[in-house]
Image (cartoon, rainbow, N blue to C red; front, side, top):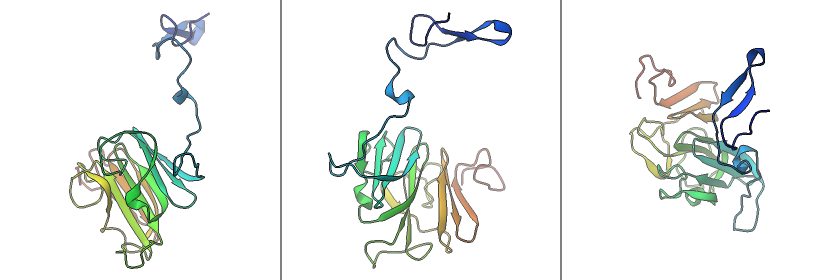
Length: 208
């Protein structure tokens, strides 16, 4: 019988022809950590008052969630500003993104160290609008590859309004490690960010 990952020595499993293949030891002795299997995350606002979650997005080292009422929460690593809390501290528990507290978030995406979110029906009628009527697109976090779509390569610690968005309005959005993409209501795709492998769809591979 082979050993279990976490016990002394590498784990062993049957290989081709009945031979044993070696697996590296992945963890210290003891039960598997909770993150190896899905565990419930209590998203609360204020603390002790759980909210119902409608959307989630997973980045490299951070996560986002949106409540059924459109409130945005973030947790995990924050060194590049990807949590949108105005600082670079990590958060072990979901924290509301206060900068977007007056917006109703309807779509989110998380990259390696950046985040993007779409807000609909701004709470303030006088708020600047871009893209489709009643829509606002925000981006924050690492920006050195242009993945925030803000026309520069600067990081943002708080959500920043993306002004250069499709005039038809945004239907959906997505984020790769260092690039971002949206699909407009006309069915056109718009991409910005890292393009060394052609992921941004530019003619010549380069960082946009």
